[in-house]
Amino acid sequence: MKINFSNFFAISFLLVSVGVYASPEEDRELFHDYFEKLFPNTEYSDYKNGVYSIDSSSREQWESIEDFPPYEINIENGEELFNTPFKNGNTYAQCFENGGIGIRQNYPFFDEDKNMVMTLELAINNCRKKNGEKPLSYYKGGPMADISAYMAYTSRGNKINLEIPNNQKALEAYEHGKKLYFTKVGQLNFSCADCHVYKTGIKLRADIPSPAIGHTTHFPAYRSGAGRLVTLHERFAGCLSRVRHKPFKAQNEEYRNLEYFITYMSNGLEINGPGSRK
Amino acid sequence: MNAIKNITLSLSLILSINMPTYSNDIAEGKKLAFDRKKGNCLACHMIDDGELAGNSGPPLLAMKARFPDKQVLFNQIWDPTKNNPNTFMPPFGKHGAITKDEINKIIEYLYTL
Image (cartoon, rainbow over all chains, first blue to last red; front, side, top):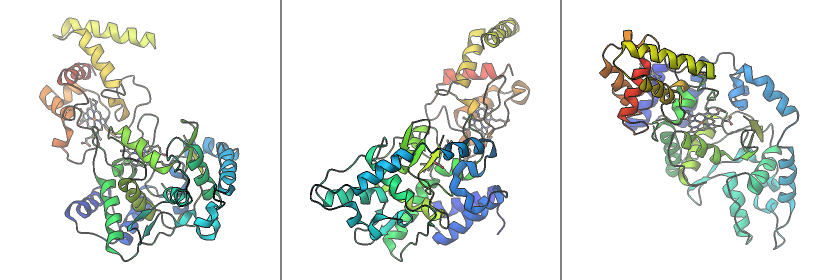
């Protein structure tokens, strides 16, 4: 399929505003073809590297950072936390498939019992609650980010293959996430897609917005600017503040459905978290 | 940096002799156009001596020649979605990111380009 900027826009605009829904798989193909055309030199598998998949000038420096990863200590700490039993003697491992090892790519998924998108971090806190422990904060790094980083680390190389069940509620969650992604918000009037689809690769002063594909492979990510790990929803919140829109509460429906939509767009990519970013 | 400031300042002083505008407005307009918390026009437009300019919008030059009608320029900054509903440029005035008065100062500065 041949796509250019304007007819891609027309297509997605139509999809979102008129409610003529394409299937998620058709959306994914559209994204895939669009980025392939925009960045003919980028291999699909390389989108897991975010902005470095399209910006060779910053890639070298990033690669040298990854040689001595700043998040190594977080993985170690996360492993220790993960293996420390709760007060009741149970462990995180008992809450997850395969003892929680190598399963990052299975999140998020649509939980048909709860009728909602379940993310890894929410599942971690649900596990704590079930065992009588207080939930961990989703923001500002700390134990939640460390445990999530460890779980991602044990899953490196596993491929994202999100399947949307044939369930009206699941499809609605996907469509809601997609709609949010394409809706302009905030005082500055941007949609996520403005920066991460239509204008991907442009320069905004010292920043280059990365392609929407590959956004979920490497979280939590160590941001050198913050000097700590940042979870995916905290990153969403950062982009929302930038457009001067009030961020949502961590793990609320908006963020989970956004995560659901963009994870689907990354199907076929390898987990390579935790990652490091500027 | 200071040298550049002095040059622009003296330049605007010279210009003010021939223009009905106060040089203060031009200097302030430049500041507003470059300030990340205000116009932040530099994030998207190459302007003058602005450092680390973005490139999602066209370079802002020859502004008086290209926008002889001030109102047209004002409207573009107040609400560019009028011209292009899907525009990447924020509706600075309409959404209250900068005031009318501030836009007018930015325009005085743009007219020196």
